[in-house]
Amino acid sequence: MQKYWVEGLFVSQRELKKSKKSGKTAPKDIEPFAKSIWANSPEEAIQFATEELSGGMWIEGPKIGKTSEEQRMRASGAPELPGFAPQKKKK
Image (cartoon, rainbow, N blue to C red; front, side, top):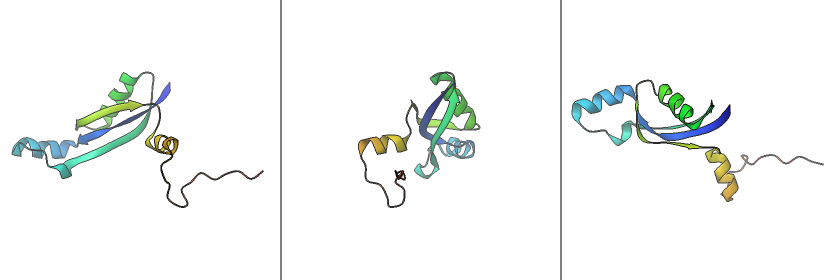
């Protein structure tokens, strides 16, 4: 098994019912999804993520990756907030 990072935007089942009645999805009803999932393949990771939506629907995504948002930001050299930097070991 491998660790996959699944990211995307979704509408929950409750909000989906509301949007079917009105015909429009309000921007406030869209929620982010970002989670690490252990799976045998990317397709299986998407399947597990879709099951976790509990009847919700994907609006954008899902995107699959091997690195998290944190790892991508650290690799690109993005500025960090004080106190969140990894601690360096003293020799």
